[in-house]
Amino acid sequence: MPTNTCFAKPRACAILYFYIGTCFLFLTAATSCKKTPDYAKVLHNPTLYSKTVHELNALVMGNNFTPVVASRNYAYAAVAGYEAIAAGNPTKYRSLVGLLNGLKAVPAAPANVDFEYAALLAYCKVGEAVTFPKGSMKAYTDSLHNLAMDHGMPEDMVKNTELYADTLSKAIIGWSKKDNYLKTRALSKFNVIPDSPGRWVPTPPMYGDAVEPNWRDIRPMVMSDAKKYDVVPPPTFNITDKNSRYYKEVIYIKNAGDSLNAEQEHIADFWDDNPGRLNVTGHTQYITKKFSPPGHWLSITGIAAGNAKADFATTVYAYAETSIALFDAFIECWAAKYKYETARPETVINQYIDKEWRPHLQTPPFPEYTCGHCTISAAAAETLTSVFGDNVAYKDTSELEFGIRSRSFKSFRQAADETSWSRFYGGIHFRNSTIVSSGYGKTVGDSVVARLQILKK
Image (cartoon, rainbow, N blue to C red; front, side):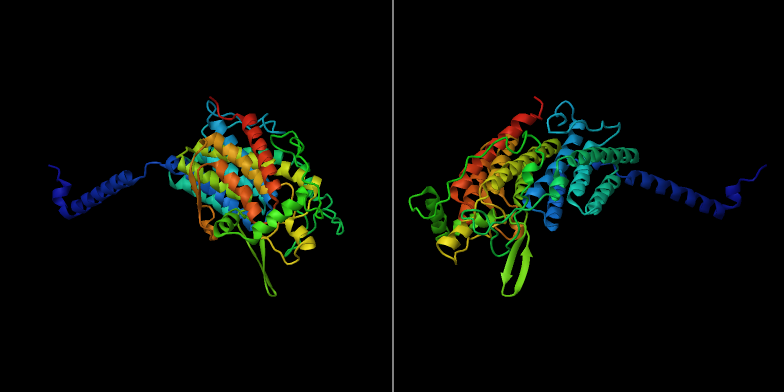
């Protein structure tokens, strides 16, 4: 009779059974511990998109871009992010092709793409390309790739999505290169004429060159051109007649600056948004940085989206519409600035009334009329109202990272109105300028909302 091996060699069999059992338990444990893919929970979180916008905002601040150029950085990135979302939600959103000047085509999306991941990548890739330096957002996009892999996105989906984001980004970058930006880099600077009463000249302490005197030549996204909304002339320069409208404007801002209360100072500081303030202490000079005006409004967009618990697509849409409005509003405003070339309050008051007078805020290096912050704030308020509604209360905490306490508002329009007062309290814009600018900014914002009509009913 054959001998039973296990009875013959009980120790060997015990060892064999031990290894078989151990392997079975190991395989069972490995199978049970394998994570269920949750990449959608992580990458489709609208807060991540807001974080991505903040990442570009910090990059723009760190590279010393002026507010007008910053608006360009944000706008093209936002359009790229939106186009990915529109491709993934064709029944709710439509492409901006044909709606934005010069945008004639974008690539179709291949199969098996995660459109939220594509929107994040496209925003970063275009944002980096128009901002510089090359590779400045690589660490962040690598972190997004790792999130996708670590949370179980299939490798073929990762590959397809990243390829789509690349092709989409190249299309938007190609479109951006035809907006005359590079051409304006080679155009002449503003010609300062020292003895020209009422005309802009550099102001202390930086005495910087006039910023972007040729920005009116940049192609807008919605407006037909920079003169789409031609601004009314400012009050005629007349500092000798105390009954003149101009003289009254000068005295009004001087008296206000001489008697600011704590609340008015906080309003001015909160909306200062100077991306490169020059601080002078004795022989020491140093720069302090903050988000510029368009960066501040993009932070507000993120706060509004979070408060509304907006989904990913709505959040991307809000950033796109607002960024486009900011971009066009700056073009409209800058066309007026370099048409009228008016002096700042500081210049006029120092020359004719009090040579020691200084405004509460540091005067930025470009003509006074019209007010950039007032224009873009009113434009942004209209786009945000179109997305999230009117009379939407919120607390703006975006300035906390710069050591400025928060302010609360009953609506986006109230915030824009306070912005117009902030430039007057800060001593850098006449009150007439802030009022006129807010009106034209609202007009630009309304035109963006009317033209796009992105959200399908």
